[in-house]
Amino acid sequence: MLNIRKFVSILLVTLVFSSITCFTAFAAAKVTFTASNVKGSIVDTVSVSVSIEPNSQIASCSLTLSYDSSKLQCISAQKGSIPVDIALAPVISTPGTITYEFARMSNLTAGGSVFTAKFKIIASSQDKVPLSLTIGVCTDQNAKAIETAVSNGSIEITGSAVSAASSVNSVHSSASNVATSSELPSVSYYSDPTVISKTSVAGATEAVSGGSSKANSSMASASVALPISESSVADPEKHITISGSNLPSDLTVSVIEIDQTSQLYETYSKQLDDKLILGIYDITLIQGQSLYALSEPIQVTLPLPAEGSSNGQYRIALFKSDHSVEYLSPEIIDSDMVFTVDELGTIAVLGEETSPILMILSIFFFIIALTVYILRKNAKKDTVNKSKS
Image (cartoon, rainbow, N blue to C red; front, side, top):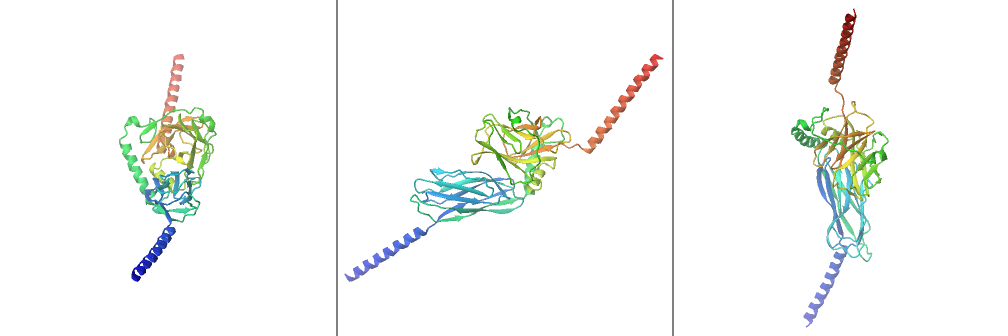
């Protein structure tokens, strides 16, 4: 009997200590937030997600994802797959950080993505850019604080500016090889397939006209303007207007003028085979905190560049999402260029410079034509004088 009691006592003590140990281990467990690790080349767009493990028991939380804005450009962010009752849209307006907050009526048990973000790689060489998470206050439905941990992520840049340019040029060259003579412009030194688009802007040109402006030397500063009507949205600082028949009224346009001294500008220049570049712009439409996807073609109005084309002719190079380059012929309306595109992104304004050989030939033929005209005129005078005599 004594042995049984002793056994029971030992068993009870063991159970008590086990319970305490389990409770302590459970209480000390931290909820882990994880940023994903992805790869991409310069000028690529990559998606990153911040996720949370299951059974977090979190009811409200705030968090920040930090990145190097000199190497990455955040173009959009949106809430993830976890169910929430209240969530502010991820804030991306400050370069280098994305902040996000969410709340629920009950504790969260599901795991999944908290929010996702899209980055454009603007670095110039191979690198591994850290994505650092900072977790603010996290509580359960009873406002009790929950301990958290983070697993930071990264974006690994696997290609350099030169290799990215070579890749795009190979695609561009393939497209050029299949171009027929009917696809080429009638008066131009370009040998690239061209899309001719001549359209007008209803009321939008006057709203933002004002001539050319000097290039903004800061690549990192993006100007965002409020919509000016239901069918158009403008950046009055850059004098750029986006117009369409069914554009939502809550759109904003973000315009970044690429610095001529940056590696990104050099990359685009190589893709354009060193044509006469008068300006390169990265243009995106934003709805809330997300990139707006076009459902139909839109009209873009740009001011004529301060450094004009030598012969008054301009071209637009659109860097498309499939890494090809589409060339457009804009219509000149007053001091603006107007053209139509089916997607937005990076746009280069190109001029046409006159070849020295063509200039010499032009002068030569002009002199010949003038000489012939003078000789004919003198011959005519001699004929008249002879007839009179």
